[in-house]
Image (tube, rainbow, N blue to C red):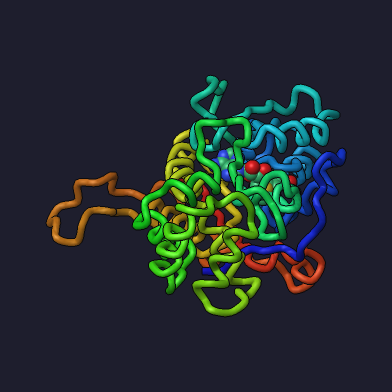
Length: 325
Ligand SMILES: C[S@@+](CC[C@H](N)C(=O)[O-])C[C@H]1O[C@@H](n2cnc3c(N)ncnc32)[C@H](O)[C@@H]1O
């Protein structure tokens, strides 16, 4: 699995950010060029973050309006500042993208939709949010930081059964020493509960019997983040839910940052583009019998070398497009 990790930045907690210093949008013009092909109408930005992608859409497609969704209330309030000048062309919704479209009634189908998955640079760089393995950072990692029902990373490490921890590190982090790591966590927490990033890094050190590499730390921290925020579940449910509201000819663009996400998007788009999805042994087709749309670019779009040089976050990105019939 490819892992996203940024060159470590200092905490930006408490700073006032504009959309631009919040996050540098990845595959910006490529995404919006594909998405806006239908012209005017409502578009869903399911992961508005700093609002970079929405801003370009609003600037280059005058008749369009955007439903700007984010599950992180802090991100949404920054998007509101970035996109303030567009007035009622933007509707802000604090929700997960798999639930957002059920929160209000749309006046018509969507002309397009896009998702730019994962977390933003600002979330990663803000030590208060606990997404990073930098020193002495609280183990939080909840995207929806206002929702106290969601367990934090510390709670998972201190309370989850050993088997669950093993599954998290194996399934989401592709960590070959997942069992040993989970065992080490459970043995340690009885005496010393997990509080900060240093505690988790110390267990990695003990498990690997050496200093963990940056990429290894990134994989383990990312695995916890994926679990805590149910990122893959949201993606699977969200893709289907958003597809239902797309207009004929509308494009759906998704930018992924690691292979587990990309696999879900690739398989969904491929399956929706097949004429028959009956199991091979069924003699007569009993499914929908026709494709719901098509994939215009089989391999998707990867960032150029120049973009990767300018923005290390782009390194693992891939854009996939699906167009509804
Ligand atoms: C990579 S950033 C998006 C950056 C944005 N495209 C821009 O131009 O600034 C991802 C954002 O999606 C949000 N997010 C991630 N998963 C989400 C979900 N399931 N539902 C809603 N928002 C989500 C995160 O909180 C974060 O703000």
